[in-house]
Length: 232
Image (cartoon, rainbow, N blue to C red; front, side, top):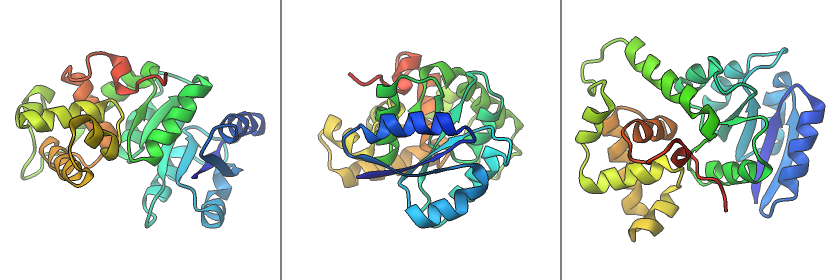
């Protein structure tokens, strides 16, 4: 059972998400709250996935994201935004968000995204993908140089990968979990885990969403929708 915590300042919106998710097989909403109550809610419900509004009046959703990701055994965090050009998306990406969804996403897509995040995959709403890509590019341009840093051009970074690693990156860009990638490539989950770790290291990121963005930039996923395939 996937345990979900909903964090949003609008009670009616939280109720709508709860109704959709509680009706899905294998998913249970274990709590809902505003930003200020997140520490107590997480401690009391131990969620696997947190749906977190990126903008809230009582506390910045990005600050909440930082707190969540600093916890031992941090849950997956899907950021909710009302705007597909939200400037906060870039900051959330750098802070380790596991995915981005528009608040008006299709219910079936919401369920798919929660399952993907819980399985260790990434979820990017197609209409917000451009903001994520632009935010990643900006973060790369604005980063201070490190002793060893991969080339800034996505094509150069991907060129460092072996053919098998590019296959893994392409499937990672489609939001697949390690187990799903293993099934697609007829490999063991342990082997895929090693490939993913190597891919992330060569790309210079420890974040699967950033890797998915690079896959999109490099044309490995084919289309924007490839970042987050719509459930059938």
